[in-house]
Length: 175
Image 1: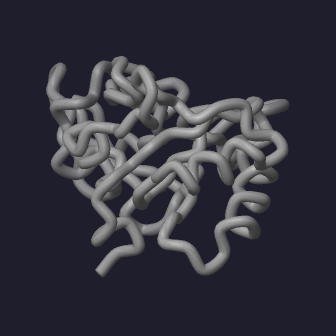
Image 2: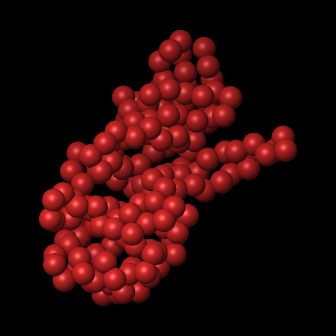
């Protein structure tokens, strides 16, 4: 069983962009032994600098930490006291639960750890065929392909709104 299965509720915490890992470490320390788990989804991207391609790890949703478990009143007040945590996303009074249909795609992408790896794709006329990688079976979410940068722009629903994110792809052949 994956570390993402078994607990059914997902929430999002808002932190300062670039501070996701630091705040996550504080959360894991404060909630050690609790049923809550904290995830900062990341993605591998190929970036060119000074003519050389390098692999970089970037946060999928900058400024957000995902929480898996159940947040009750006690957990909420413990969360609110963690330094660096700006706010728990809420709907009126309760923490905002991320809908399961939104999390299904995110969980599929991060199923082999928190970092989304590169997918291999084949492009035939305007049709994108994913051969392997995290995008396998998610072709319908691909919005566009940037062949020069080797990136697929996909649309994910997160925290009640659609977001376009770039994921790394290796284009095998373009016909």
